[in-house]
Length: 161
Image (cartoon, rainbow, N blue to C red; front, side):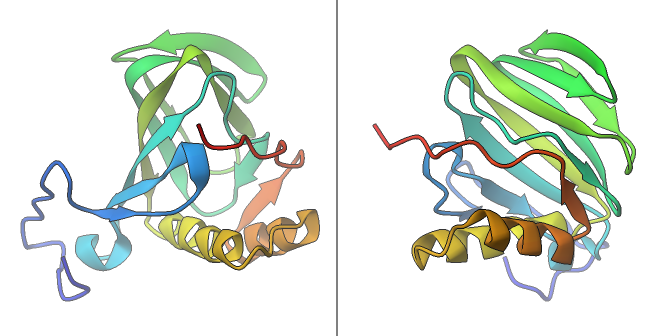
């Protein structure tokens, strides 16, 4: 896939295709990015260890949707909490504080952002990890640059298994 794709061209990503980002256990996998969708959509596959997920946060620019591929997740969306298993779907407009955490056996999600752009946040986060530059201040700055407000700090990293 190259940046030359536009939204009028089909995008086919094989099972092992896309862009894997080095972020430990969550291992975001970019399936569709802005240049491939004409800026309209980003799609990521994310795996989470049991009990793990992002802190409470809010997007100012993108709507975000989640489809549970396997396992179960506890979603806190705008003050409402519920658990969703395989096949559950959550869609949030920009401006709704939210977080999720994987259930007892972990799980994976398909995450959609409209419009695209948040995939760049994950790419830049992976660069910070690779450079051993992760600090709370660095994450806050990165988040602000991408229209994301972290309402809680990220939890400590989980060592790889």
